[in-house]
Length: 144
Image (cartoon, rainbow, N blue to C red; front, top):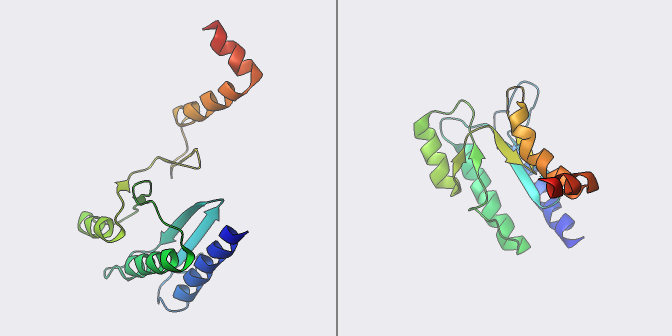
């Protein structure tokens, strides 16, 4: 319950930023920054402008959040994925956030993420893991 209360604070911080940043992610999404959460995983989505204002604000929010909540962010396990960002900006973002850049497809919550139609080979690790947890999967492994 305490974790849920703490993450609600993060959501409210992101909402406060959205009232102050002058641009939106897209024509359909009118916020400048989105925080999507599932269990203890958070995906932050932001539109990067020339001045990197949204990225700077995100980093400030994350620092404030860790201070007030007592929770810590593992930047070694974190990453950012870019879309339509020039390499110079990408390097600045990587330095500001303190986490590495990755390219699609990536895995999030054990599911492959891609902007293209997912290929079958992206799902093989997930299928293998599910098969390993089922009775039939265990029998198949024993036969091998």
